[in-house]
Image (cartoon, rainbow, N blue to C red; front, side, top):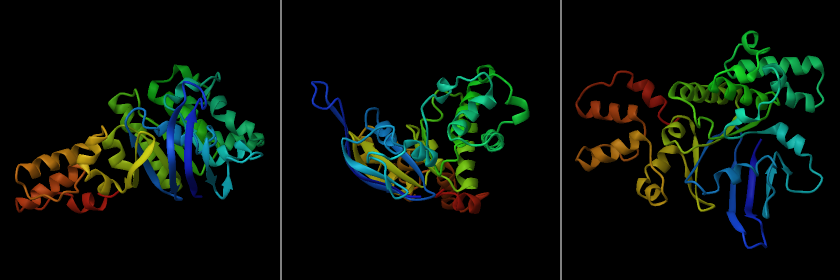
Length: 297
């Protein structure tokens, strides 16, 4: 299921003294099965952009086509759109409201008019997909869970709608390192095992480097660059110029090259840099074959 964005422009409060254009003439296509990382400084238009993809926001100009349907047209069922494109907001746990986890996860499927059996099946499936035990949490209050568990429940509520595309806006914001790693592994698995298209907004370059197959870099409401992580992160100077950094591996590689080490200029993970240094020293990197296979993942 492709998503096509054509000449998208969004202006907040048009015609007023407070008018501000957040997106300028943006055109791109999200292909089925991609894992896209959306990067940009605060105010670059990242969140405004992704909120157009399931009809939460309407463009001032341009259009968004989801699975062949122009969702900007009058009469289009936004419920149908949101069955296909699920959006998980930043701090989604703030939207939990039911008395039990099972009821919260069931909220979306109930609104779809599914049978009791279908709803129960989806709730069991979604809770399992986010790495929680149905038996352990289903009848618990979501507000008695840890922060990371609450976020998983909120994501499960979106997954229960069985979207073909999952959009996550800063999914690890506010979590401790352990919770952050768990959420990222969950997202990686959702993409790999369900062949789901994932679009993730993040300011963390290392998170994006570990997961995304393609990057969109936004600056002042425009698409500044796009490409694979390897293609984008080698453009360190341009990224710095628009207020963005690079992953730790790319920064280390740059500094080692400045110090005279003959390393390739497109390394962006710490494993890649380690393996390249070992090769320079004439040693065979332990696990180098596995690292190389995952370098572009």
